[in-house]
Image (cartoon, rainbow, N blue to C red):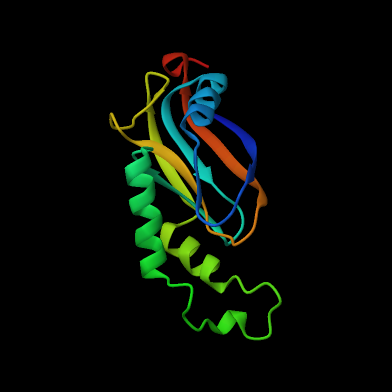
Length: 145
């Protein structure tokens, strides 16, 4: 078994910026040499998350709209009391999305549905430099190391 770990560095715009990570993750899987296994994508921090979506304008709009309705901007958030950042809403949205995702790798390819992409969801209320940790684990060259 082999493990390959790396990071993706991104500049985000905040405010529910959605970034398609799929091409980056697919390239990392190719670089890893893993043919059969699992790739885990994890975003450190508590104001961003990772999920799968169809990366299409209508779905992206609907996803943002649903998160905004679920976690309204005008609610009273205790984390914001006395805090200069006032980003409690960002923490709550990121908690709903979740910080990580695992995807099977078969024949050195991500096992994703036809319209399924791996998406970073930046919930913070300001632009951020984001680090995405990626780890590929599995067998190489059909299990012969």
